[in-house]
Image (cartoon, rainbow, N blue to C red; front, top):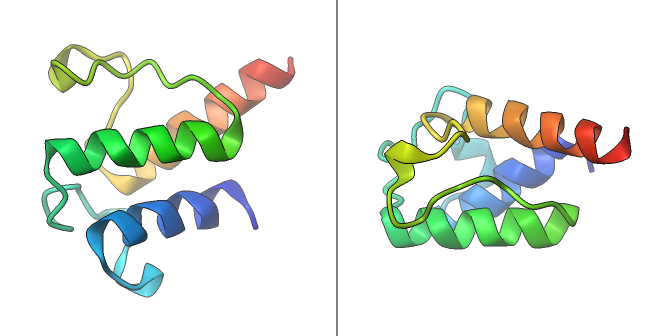
Length: 86
C-alpha cells in the first residue's frame, strides 16, 4: 500500500469511516476528528511509517506540520519519509 492509501486508512479508522469516505480535501473537522483523535492518528502514522512527525499535540497551530487537510498530511508524511531515506 502506498503512503496516501495507508494515511487515508489510518485517518478513516480514527474517524470510524470507510476509506472511500476520506478525500484529499477532507479536513479533520469534516471527518469528525477531534484533537485527541488527531493526536492518535499522528501516533498511528508515526508507528506505521517509523517516522517522527513534528507535531505539537498541546498546540497544533504551533506545529511545523500542516494538518489542515488529508492531502497536506499525506504530502508532509511523504516529505518526512523522503528526508529519512536521504
